[in-house]
Image 1 (tube, rainbow, N blue to C red):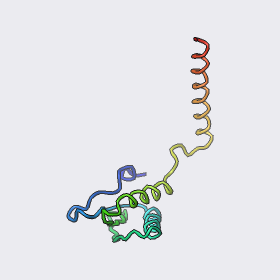
Image 2: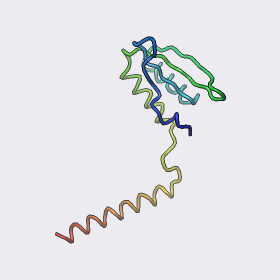
Image 3: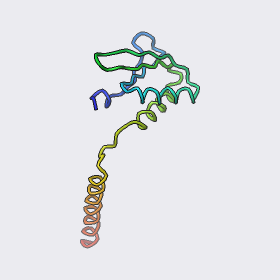
Image 4: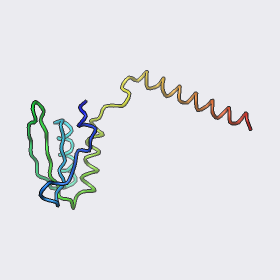
Length: 113
């Protein structure tokens, strides 16, 4: 996963201050965002660009729709993100250790009082 995937993917338009620019590096995420915009009747302008070997998809949306557009952006990103711990066994081992430590703290606090 590229570092750009962790940075905020929207900003104010550099010359037209009444527009927000959303950018996506993955076609699937961009398609989901576009579908979300269409379902919520949010008008937009779309553009595609190539930066080296990577495609970037841009969406310009009026700041009037900022709140709903940011919400749809987060929903699209969440739908296509990878889990923090992909291995299910490791995930449950870490959770078990956490709960055992928490149980130890609670038992220690009760026995001390």
